[in-house]
Image (cartoon, rainbow, N blue to C red; front, side, top):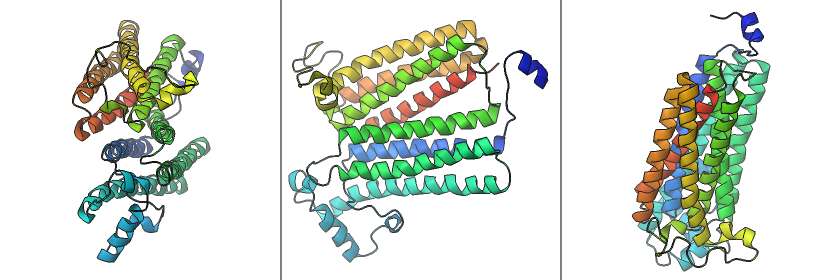
Length: 349
């Protein structure tokens, strides 16, 4: 092994590992994957507005009696989604969508506990140095803000809309991936030892650029979901027989079009997927040629992006069934995580 002085002479200073804490954070990452998938199912089944109140503590308990169910159903009947989309829905049908949203919120609470309690234990046992304690405390605050943002998103669909705001949906999903980046990167630092100074800056920068493209594609997918844009133009590669469909960028001002026009949202998401796939494949080839030790991480990322591309086309052609839509979102999370792994590997000596 290199001594500390040797690592410093090479411009690379690695912190000691802390693998018990890393294992805990990897567990959090798996729970975040489940949370993102369940959130996708909630959106695909239009279940997100079934609970019209936000009770951070008492809301953990579901309705326990017929009277409780009657109150929840009555609350739902007051919002536009019921009046304009689900009017006449039976109580049993309401319970079906209620359980999805309740499970999504409950999992969020459980993740909060699984993060907060071990964090306090590691802190009081002296297993965290001061910088890491502050870093993990910041991640905990991010998680709490995600719960508040989730309610802010739901509230957008309770008065004048029949679904949540696509802007707030994209913000909610984007923050979930930011939290995953913070959790997983920290776990890798603790597992492998943090590299403070990078030896190969070119490939490392390229990996972060590609990771940014993946994140942008995920946000574009959130707007597709928020606008129900995946339910139209279910052909590929053409849209209604055209490469460039009519109605593209028809909103004024034009800059708002990708966020308000379902045609443009789907057009950008499907074509930007090609850009992302090519960028990932190019990066993987460069890494395998120049940094063979990171070749396995690059290969996994390349395989995941091709699988995601194929799955995206399949989901579109099948008119976004729940199981394929949820799988597509899960694979987006895995692809993003594999990108983080490669970026971290490229920062190591």
